[in-house]
Figure 1 (spheres, each protein chain N blue to C red):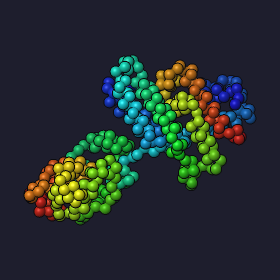
Figure 2: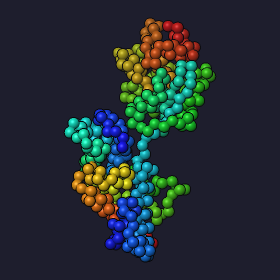
Figure 3: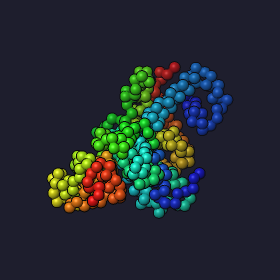
Figure 4: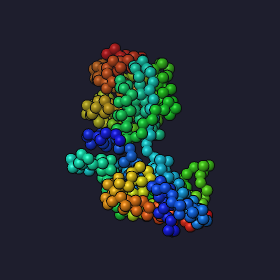
Length: 167
Length: 226
């Protein structure tokens, strides 16, 4: 473990990359992620005084980012639906997956987008940001059992979306 | 869904080791099929949301070249040349780029080869104008107008701040012109050193007047001795 950053500036500098990455996954848009990250860091600035000395500052930052990101997603859902950044059809043809695989990717992507927000967040945190279940619980609220259940529920739904056709 | 789903997921996420019951089930047709399906699900997730699949972060490439005015750093995005800097350490150049542009900063002589080649020729006295695309996203519209007006001043000539102000249709804006040029992100290539004060005075320069004179001398400009 690296020593705990003393100032908020150090904390945000250290975690900026991963937080933007997380928000980009959550929102499916890099520019929106940059904006949401900025907003999240402003909220962090206002709340930094209340961060206890023993608190997990990384999970704390993820919690603020999650709330900000999910708010942004809610605001957006009132607007028109938008294309998502990763279009399986746009993958290079030479190295491109077979048609069947493209169908699978499309199905999984749709399923991820349809997940309840907490399940989606828990899954992304577990798979791409190396957060343990205790940290996910600290991020999303609830306990470790609930955090794990969220990740497992999410994966089961994605597996169903992938189709029963897999032999 | 099967009654073994949780156990299978725990195995694949390395949350738990496999139990004898799960091992037996994985030997069945159904077990093999489910293992394969979950693996494909995780692969798809990786492909869609992993590093390759996440929305691409802007990357800016940079390089350093030795020149008669010291080490010059250049940085280019996919859109074009974004920054030229000198009299600065590599660490502070990189830190400034990361902060200003919010991009990943990668050292790459290959991605900056074209502008580096042109700059070398310029400092060798073999080139008098640059031909590169510019990335001026991080400037204001006013700054861009000033910078583009300065870019049209040919090597060997100089114009005054007031003249630039007139050329962009703001005849009383010479002070703002001076400020905009002082923040030129792409000095040398956008030749703000060719903009001088009225009455044959050299004016200011962000990089220091010594360097301004050196550049003007290199271009054979009489203003070098002002």
